[in-house]
Image 1 (cartoon, helix red, strand yellow):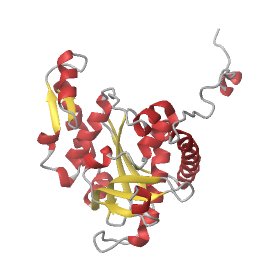
Image 2 (cartoon, helix red, strand yellow):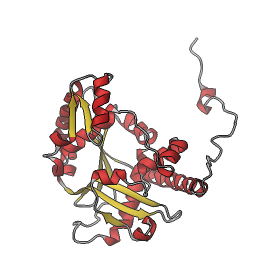
Image 3 (tube, one colour):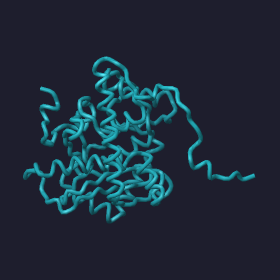
Image 4 (tube, one colour):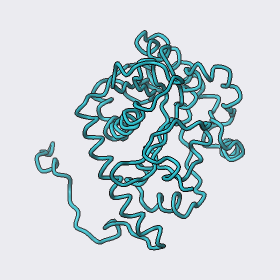
Length: 294
C-alpha cells in the first residue's frame, strides 16, 4: 500500500519517533520543500535517487536542537544521552570524526555549551514563553496528510501544540528585534513553515479524538525566538495572517512545481524547469535607486 493510499484524505496522527520522522523518505515536509526550492538537483539526488549525501555540520542547528531538549518537559532526562560534547574545536579533525561517529546525536564543542545554558535561562525568564511551554498538550506531535491540489503526501511535526491547540515553535536566531525577526521569517522560510503547519492543524482538527485534549479556541502560530549570541534575548511573537496567507500561496506554487518535476523524475528523466537554461541576469531592481557615496 502506498503512503497516499494509507493516508487517504484523512490527516492522521503519526506515532513515530523523531528519528523515524526524519528518516522517512515518502512524505515531503517543510524542510524538503525548502530544499526543492533552493537546490532541485540535491532534492532529486536525496529524495528520488535516495543517495546518501553527507550534510555540512551546523553549529546553529545543533544549538537549537540542544535547546529544544532542555525546554521540552518530555525530554527533561534525555539531554545527556542525546547530546555529545566534544572537547576539540569545531574545525579540528577530532571534531569531524566525532560528528561522523555519532550519527543521529547532537554534537557540540565544549566551548559553545554555555550558549545552551544562556538560551535556556533566557527563555525561562520570559513569562510569556514559559506560559506557552507549560501549557503544552503535545510535543513533537507528527501528522501526515495529503496536499489537496497535488495529492503529495506531506508531514509536519509540531514542536508544541498547546492545550488551546495553538502551534508553538522555538527558533534560535542571531537577531531578536522585530526587523531581524521579520527578515528571518522571510529569508529562512519560516512564514512558509507556519502556513504548512497551520494547514495540517486545520485539516486535522475535525479528526481529533480524546487523546488530544482542548478546543480550537485559537487558530494561531506563535514563535519563541531566542538569540544564540550576545545578550541571548528571548521574544515571543505571533505571526500575522497576511504572512500566513503569503506562505500558503508560496507553498502551493512550490508543491505544484514539485509535482510537475516528479512526473519527469519518476520516469527516469531529469527535469529542472528552466534552471539549466541560459538566461539573462542583471542587478537587483532596488539598485537602480541607490546612489553611490563618492
